[in-house]
Image (cartoon, rainbow, N blue to C red):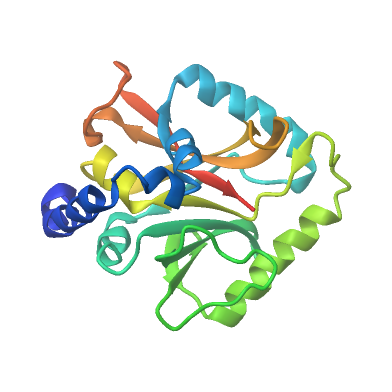
Length: 232
């Protein structure tokens, strides 16, 4: 398999050019989510990972797996790099229980109440460790089923908030990673959200070999990355 950086080098140059054009003095005013994007899409320490994993006790009743393992995610990420700016990873409930849905599009935020999909979007369901394409109708049903599951648990609204999906920006994928492993691991965690009175929200943490990272902060063999901004 080709190096991830080589596969998308053309796309990366295009995105960097767009980034350079957009980053003028008014960019922070135009992009209201820039600070939160920079804050959430980042490498974290092992201690931060462990703290977020411990926070999952707040959501124990949801019976969410401790990790999701995904085989061959790199070809799917590469295939969507020219047509998408974001990967939105939804928590869903399908026939197997709580799982994940990957939504590729150009929107930083999706309508969390009126769940609908355009023809230009790509939807992939995680089932039995692999991603497979899914219909918009099934995607909507699975997202709503997870929301119903969440609401039926009677979780404290003073301490927790509902996370429907987590946004991972392609820009940060290109800047941080050389490639993805044949089997990627997303650790289930809960993060204290500073923008919502520190309430705990479901989060996902990518565990990846530091050799697959461009500029890892850690000196350990394994690096950990918060996937992105939790929505809504």
